[in-house]
Amino acid sequence: MTEVPSWFSAAIAVEPTARRIEVDGAHINYLSWGDAHRPGIVFVHGGAAHAHWWSHIAPAFLTEHSVAAIDLSGHGDSDRRDTYSLDTWCDEVAAVIADAEFDAPPVLVGHSMGGFVTIATAARHPELLAGAVIIDSPVVEMDPEVTVGRATDMFSKEREYDDPTGPIERFRTIPPQDVYLPYVKRHVAERSLRHDPDGKWRWKFDSRIFVPRRRDAAELLPQVTCRVALLRCENGLVTADIGDYMYNQLGRVAPVIELPTAGHHPMLDVPLILITAIRSLIADWDHSRPLRRG
Image: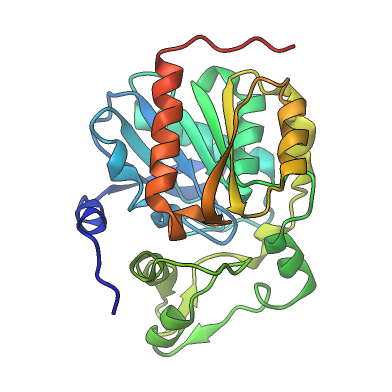
Protein backbone atom coordinates (compact mmCIF):
# COMPACT_ATOMS: atom_id res chain seq x y z
CA MET A 1 0.00 0.00 0.00
CA THR A 2 1.35 3.41 -1.01
CA GLU A 3 2.09 5.70 1.92
CA VAL A 4 0.22 9.01 1.79
CA PRO A 5 2.77 11.86 2.00
CA SER A 6 2.38 14.54 4.64
CA TRP A 7 2.03 17.37 2.10
CA PHE A 8 -1.08 15.71 0.63
CA SER A 9 -2.67 15.00 4.01
CA ALA A 10 -2.05 18.60 5.07
CA ALA A 11 -3.52 19.95 1.81
CA ILE A 12 -6.80 18.05 1.91
CA ALA A 13 -7.17 18.87 5.60
CA VAL A 14 -7.71 22.50 4.55
CA GLU A 15 -11.45 22.41 4.01
CA PRO A 16 -12.83 24.76 1.34
CA THR A 17 -16.07 26.66 1.65
CA ALA A 18 -18.68 25.58 -0.89
CA ARG A 19 -20.56 28.50 -2.46
CA ARG A 20 -23.47 28.60 -4.90
CA ILE A 21 -24.43 31.39 -7.28
CA GLU A 22 -27.03 31.61 -10.04
CA VAL A 23 -25.88 32.12 -13.62
CA ASP A 24 -28.40 32.21 -16.45
CA GLY A 25 -30.95 30.12 -14.58
CA ALA A 26 -28.54 27.48 -13.23
CA HIS A 27 -26.99 27.17 -9.79
CA ILE A 28 -23.21 27.04 -10.06
CA ASN A 29 -21.12 25.56 -7.28
CA TYR A 30 -17.59 26.66 -6.49
CA LEU A 31 -15.07 26.00 -3.74
CA SER A 32 -13.25 28.81 -1.97
CA TRP A 33 -10.08 28.81 0.14
CA GLY A 34 -8.32 31.55 2.06
CA ASP A 35 -8.76 35.27 2.67
CA ALA A 36 -11.18 36.60 0.05
CA HIS A 37 -9.41 39.97 -0.17
CA ARG A 38 -6.08 38.68 -1.42
CA PRO A 39 -5.06 38.40 -5.09
CA GLY A 40 -6.97 35.52 -6.61
CA ILE A 41 -6.39 32.29 -8.50
CA VAL A 42 -9.34 30.51 -10.13
CA PHE A 43 -8.99 26.89 -11.24
CA VAL A 44 -11.11 25.44 -14.06
CA HIS A 45 -11.35 21.64 -14.37
CA GLY A 46 -11.41 19.51 -17.53
CA GLY A 47 -14.29 17.65 -19.17
CA ALA A 48 -16.24 15.26 -16.89
CA ALA A 49 -14.14 16.47 -13.94
CA HIS A 50 -15.02 18.84 -11.08
CA ALA A 51 -13.67 21.38 -8.60
CA HIS A 52 -12.20 18.75 -6.25
CA TRP A 53 -9.61 17.83 -8.88
CA TRP A 54 -7.90 20.94 -7.46
CA SER A 55 -8.55 20.50 -3.73
CA HIS A 56 -5.06 19.07 -3.08
CA ILE A 57 -3.50 21.80 -5.28
CA ALA A 58 -5.26 24.97 -4.08
CA PRO A 59 -3.94 25.06 -0.46
CA ALA A 60 -0.35 25.38 -1.74
CA PHE A 61 -1.13 28.98 -2.78
CA LEU A 62 -2.85 30.27 0.35
CA THR A 63 0.10 32.12 1.90
CA GLU A 64 -0.29 34.85 -0.73
CA HIS A 65 -3.54 34.18 -2.59
CA SER A 66 -7.21 33.52 -2.26
CA VAL A 67 -8.25 30.53 -4.37
CA ALA A 68 -11.47 29.37 -6.01
CA ALA A 69 -12.29 26.28 -8.08
CA ILE A 70 -15.48 26.15 -10.14
CA ASP A 71 -17.82 23.30 -11.01
CA LEU A 72 -18.84 24.29 -14.54
CA SER A 73 -22.50 23.61 -15.33
CA GLY A 74 -23.00 19.93 -16.13
CA HIS A 75 -20.16 19.01 -13.76
CA GLY A 76 -19.68 18.31 -10.09
CA ASP A 77 -22.31 19.84 -7.82
CA SER A 78 -23.50 22.48 -10.28
CA ASP A 79 -26.81 22.27 -12.12
CA ARG A 80 -27.17 20.72 -15.55
CA ARG A 81 -28.40 22.68 -18.58
CA ASP A 82 -30.34 21.76 -21.70
CA THR A 83 -27.36 22.90 -23.80
CA TYR A 84 -23.76 23.88 -23.12
CA SER A 85 -21.43 26.37 -24.79
CA LEU A 86 -18.08 28.06 -24.25
CA ASP A 87 -19.95 31.37 -23.94
CA THR A 88 -22.06 30.08 -21.05
CA TRP A 89 -19.09 28.52 -19.26
CA CYS A 90 -17.21 31.83 -19.65
CA ASP A 91 -20.15 33.64 -18.04
CA GLU A 92 -20.01 31.19 -15.14
CA VAL A 93 -16.30 31.81 -14.61
CA ALA A 94 -16.88 35.58 -14.75
CA ALA A 95 -19.67 35.25 -12.17
CA VAL A 96 -17.41 33.30 -9.79
CA ILE A 97 -14.70 35.97 -10.13
CA ALA A 98 -17.25 38.66 -9.24
CA ASP A 99 -18.67 36.71 -6.31
CA ALA A 100 -15.29 35.78 -4.80
CA GLU A 101 -14.38 39.43 -4.08
CA PHE A 102 -10.69 39.08 -4.90
CA ASP A 103 -8.42 41.98 -4.01
CA ALA A 104 -7.22 42.18 -7.63
CA PRO A 105 -8.01 40.51 -10.95
CA PRO A 106 -7.17 36.80 -10.58
CA VAL A 107 -5.02 34.43 -12.57
CA LEU A 108 -7.21 31.87 -14.33
CA VAL A 109 -5.80 28.32 -14.55
CA GLY A 110 -7.57 25.82 -16.82
CA HIS A 111 -6.84 22.18 -17.61
CA SER A 112 -7.81 20.40 -20.85
CA MET A 113 -11.41 21.46 -21.61
CA GLY A 114 -11.00 24.00 -18.83
CA GLY A 115 -8.09 25.40 -20.82
CA PHE A 116 -10.47 26.08 -23.70
CA VAL A 117 -12.80 27.88 -21.28
CA THR A 118 -9.80 29.82 -19.97
CA ILE A 119 -8.80 30.89 -23.49
CA ALA A 120 -12.34 32.00 -24.27
CA THR A 121 -12.65 33.88 -20.98
CA ALA A 122 -9.32 35.63 -21.54
CA ALA A 123 -10.38 36.65 -25.06
CA ARG A 124 -13.87 37.83 -24.10
CA HIS A 125 -13.30 39.25 -20.62
CA PRO A 126 -9.66 40.48 -20.56
CA GLU A 127 -10.46 43.14 -17.99
CA LEU A 128 -11.29 40.42 -15.44
CA LEU A 129 -7.92 38.64 -15.48
CA ALA A 130 -4.34 39.27 -14.44
CA GLY A 131 -3.23 36.28 -16.50
CA ALA A 132 -4.15 32.86 -17.81
CA VAL A 133 -2.41 29.47 -17.51
CA ILE A 134 -3.51 26.80 -19.99
CA ILE A 135 -2.62 23.22 -19.07
CA ASP A 136 -2.37 20.62 -21.87
CA SER A 137 -5.28 21.89 -23.97
CA PRO A 138 -4.80 20.74 -27.62
CA VAL A 139 -6.80 23.48 -29.29
CA VAL A 140 -6.11 22.39 -32.89
CA GLU A 141 -7.21 18.79 -32.52
CA MET A 142 -10.24 16.92 -31.21
CA ASP A 143 -9.21 15.77 -27.77
CA PRO A 144 -9.87 12.19 -26.55
CA GLU A 145 -12.65 13.19 -24.14
CA VAL A 146 -14.71 14.55 -27.05
CA THR A 147 -13.81 11.69 -29.37
CA VAL A 148 -14.82 9.06 -26.83
CA GLY A 149 -17.84 11.03 -25.69
CA ARG A 150 -19.25 11.34 -29.20
CA ALA A 151 -18.26 7.96 -30.64
CA THR A 152 -19.09 5.58 -27.79
CA ASP A 153 -21.48 5.17 -24.89
CA MET A 154 -18.71 5.48 -22.31
CA PHE A 155 -20.04 8.89 -21.31
CA SER A 156 -23.44 9.02 -23.01
CA LYS A 157 -24.92 6.06 -21.14
CA GLU A 158 -25.50 7.06 -17.54
CA ARG A 159 -24.35 4.31 -15.24
CA GLU A 160 -25.78 3.60 -11.83
CA TYR A 161 -24.39 1.56 -8.95
CA ASP A 162 -25.76 0.09 -5.74
CA ASP A 163 -22.44 0.59 -3.98
CA PRO A 164 -19.74 3.23 -4.67
CA THR A 165 -16.81 0.95 -3.83
CA GLY A 166 -16.55 -0.69 -7.27
CA PRO A 167 -16.64 2.46 -9.42
CA ILE A 168 -14.22 4.24 -7.09
CA GLU A 169 -11.74 1.38 -7.40
CA ARG A 170 -12.16 1.27 -11.21
CA PHE A 171 -11.97 5.07 -11.67
CA ARG A 172 -9.85 6.08 -14.65
CA THR A 173 -9.39 9.05 -16.93
CA ILE A 174 -9.82 9.72 -20.63
CA PRO A 175 -7.19 9.47 -21.95
CA PRO A 176 -5.74 6.89 -19.55
CA GLN A 177 -2.18 7.44 -18.41
CA ASP A 178 0.60 5.21 -17.14
CA VAL A 179 0.93 6.79 -13.70
CA TYR A 180 -1.60 7.94 -11.11
CA LEU A 181 -0.73 8.71 -7.51
CA PRO A 182 -3.20 6.29 -5.87
CA TYR A 183 -4.05 8.53 -2.93
CA VAL A 184 -4.82 11.45 -5.28
CA LYS A 185 -6.85 9.30 -7.65
CA ARG A 186 -8.93 7.90 -4.79
CA HIS A 187 -9.52 11.38 -3.33
CA VAL A 188 -10.81 12.59 -6.71
CA ALA A 189 -12.84 9.43 -7.41
CA GLU A 190 -14.64 9.56 -4.06
CA ARG A 191 -15.88 13.06 -4.95
CA SER A 192 -16.93 12.16 -8.49
CA LEU A 193 -20.11 10.26 -7.55
CA ARG A 194 -23.45 11.52 -6.27
CA HIS A 195 -25.85 9.56 -4.05
CA ASP A 196 -29.37 10.05 -5.44
CA PRO A 197 -32.66 9.84 -3.52
CA ASP A 198 -33.41 6.46 -5.12
CA GLY A 199 -30.38 5.03 -3.31
CA LYS A 200 -28.26 4.69 -6.48
CA TRP A 201 -24.79 6.13 -7.03
CA ARG A 202 -24.12 7.93 -10.34
CA TRP A 203 -21.25 9.93 -11.85
CA LYS A 204 -21.80 13.66 -11.41
CA PHE A 205 -21.16 14.86 -14.99
CA ASP A 206 -23.73 15.28 -17.76
CA SER A 207 -22.79 13.39 -20.96
CA ARG A 208 -23.98 16.33 -23.11
CA ILE A 209 -21.00 18.44 -22.05
CA PHE A 210 -19.07 17.10 -25.05
CA VAL A 211 -21.35 18.70 -27.63
CA PRO A 212 -19.86 22.27 -27.80
CA ARG A 213 -17.32 23.02 -30.54
CA ARG A 214 -13.98 23.25 -28.80
CA ARG A 215 -12.18 24.53 -31.90
CA ASP A 216 -13.80 27.88 -31.12
CA ALA A 217 -11.05 28.34 -28.54
CA ALA A 218 -8.37 28.05 -31.25
CA GLU A 219 -10.03 30.85 -33.20
CA LEU A 220 -9.94 33.01 -30.06
CA LEU A 221 -6.22 32.58 -29.34
CA PRO A 222 -5.13 35.69 -31.29
CA GLN A 223 -7.63 37.78 -29.30
CA VAL A 224 -6.03 37.00 -25.92
CA THR A 225 -4.33 40.16 -24.65
CA CYS A 226 -3.64 39.36 -20.98
CA ARG A 227 -0.51 37.55 -19.82
CA VAL A 228 -0.73 33.89 -20.75
CA ALA A 229 1.40 30.77 -20.42
CA LEU A 230 1.07 27.25 -21.79
CA LEU A 231 1.96 24.18 -19.75
CA ARG A 232 2.32 21.09 -21.91
CA CYS A 233 2.72 17.64 -20.41
CA GLU A 234 5.62 15.48 -21.60
CA ASN A 235 3.27 12.50 -22.05
CA GLY A 236 0.14 14.55 -22.66
CA LEU A 237 -1.89 15.77 -25.63
CA VAL A 238 -0.16 19.02 -26.55
CA THR A 239 2.67 17.94 -28.84
CA ALA A 240 5.60 20.20 -29.65
CA ASP A 241 3.92 21.12 -32.95
CA ILE A 242 0.67 22.08 -31.21
CA GLY A 243 2.65 24.07 -28.67
CA ASP A 244 4.40 25.95 -31.50
CA TYR A 245 1.05 26.65 -33.18
CA MET A 246 -0.43 28.07 -29.97
CA TYR A 247 2.74 30.08 -29.31
CA ASN A 248 2.48 31.69 -32.74
CA GLN A 249 -1.26 32.35 -32.42
CA LEU A 250 -0.63 34.08 -29.09
CA GLY A 251 1.83 36.49 -30.71
CA ARG A 252 5.02 34.65 -29.74
CA VAL A 253 4.99 36.16 -26.23
CA ALA A 254 3.58 33.26 -24.17
CA PRO A 255 6.05 30.83 -22.58
CA VAL A 256 5.49 27.17 -23.44
CA ILE A 257 6.73 25.02 -20.56
CA GLU A 258 6.92 21.22 -20.54
CA LEU A 259 6.06 19.41 -17.32
CA PRO A 260 8.52 16.47 -17.20
CA THR A 261 7.10 12.93 -16.91
CA ALA A 262 3.54 14.30 -16.70
CA GLY A 263 0.57 12.60 -18.31
CA HIS A 264 -2.39 14.61 -19.58
CA HIS A 265 -3.71 14.97 -16.02
CA PRO A 266 -0.69 16.34 -14.12
CA MET A 267 -2.65 16.95 -10.90
CA LEU A 268 -3.01 13.16 -10.71
CA ASP A 269 0.60 12.14 -11.33
CA VAL A 270 2.95 15.12 -10.79
CA PRO A 271 1.02 17.57 -8.58
CA LEU A 272 4.13 19.07 -6.96
CA ILE A 273 5.68 19.78 -10.37
CA LEU A 274 2.40 21.41 -11.43
CA ILE A 275 2.28 23.54 -8.27
CA THR A 276 5.89 24.64 -8.78
CA ALA A 277 5.26 25.61 -12.41
CA ILE A 278 2.20 27.72 -11.55
CA ARG A 279 3.94 29.34 -8.58
CA SER A 280 6.95 30.22 -10.74
CA LEU A 281 4.80 31.80 -13.44
CA ILE A 282 2.82 33.92 -11.00
CA ALA A 283 5.98 35.03 -9.18
CA ASP A 284 7.53 36.07 -12.47
CA TRP A 285 4.39 37.94 -13.55
CA ASP A 286 4.39 39.81 -10.23
CA HIS A 287 7.93 41.09 -10.83
CA SER A 288 8.26 41.63 -14.58
CA ARG A 289 6.73 43.52 -17.47
CA PRO A 290 4.80 41.59 -20.16
CA LEU A 291 6.38 41.23 -23.58
CA ARG A 292 4.69 43.06 -26.42
CA ARG A 293 3.26 41.12 -29.30
CA GLY A 294 5.44 40.98 -32.41
